[in-house]
Image 1: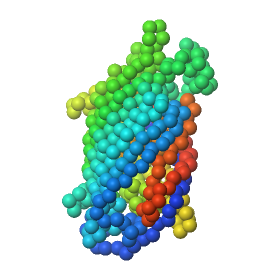
Image 2 (image 1 turned 60 degrees about the horizontal axis):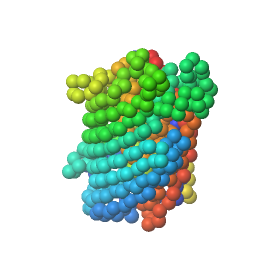
Image 3 (image 1 turned 180 degrees about the vertical axis):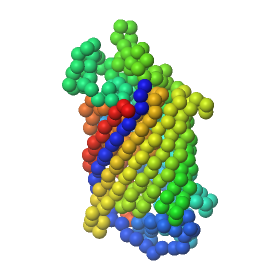
Image 4 (image 1 turned 90 degrees about the horizontal axis):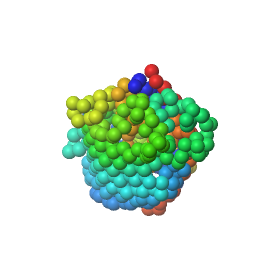
Length: 375
């Protein structure tokens, strides 16, 4: 098992339906003095409120997806100096999402900005994910080659699957996980130090049968990959982030750059010993802020990991949650194994602009390029 280096460059344009305005500021603690004031701060609602939204998606791998997501948000009081500089003080989120192709993702999460008036931001997430039709095309840069079956190479997924069988390049998994992330604001709030703990258990189902092993089954028998029986994938995280976004959950402008290290070890319950370092830079720009809510976004990502990573953890990235994030991470950041299987995604999560009571349907256009290789 060799080190893997992964690179991804992403561009996206997102269109929605509302503009943004700015309001006057207020004194801030030193550790938040350089934070950008949130858009529409003058019309921001005080106190707490609930909102829900339907989740509708279509993916040629996973089929039609339907679900619902709901928030309960506490924004605090306008008398709080931080009121105009935080999107909210506390937010709870719950999601249920299923697809016709066997994928599920259910989430409970909490996020708190400057908890208790301190410079700390806390995030906690519980997730259950199931996929009965996950792709497996090999490990590392070998997955970039044409698909093959019994010595014959095929230029398309359909041709290879037709020869090998519909489940030859697939496996199933159940993945419950919990994550806690603590961030500490530094240098006026532009920089944050972060520390995290991930606890994940992955249950693997291989679709091997007598005389007809799958691609994963063959690689497992040859000891080409590890983690074939699943297991714990616990890790510690630490890093730094630089953030100038105007509105953390849904930015129109600014940059977000983070660099994080991840350490997994048998000494604290994981099934494998490995390390990973990931650096990503994201930029957001609104070319017509007074005329339309059009946002141009781009991301550059570089990730390197050591040997010893279980195959089911080798192609995942730390990040957010929710079906919207999952689809965008798969489309915007294709650092997973090469997608020989053609994939088209359409996502339609409704959202309500902060200045109106009407729901809008964003349209997102993505373009991406990436590469992975063994070092």
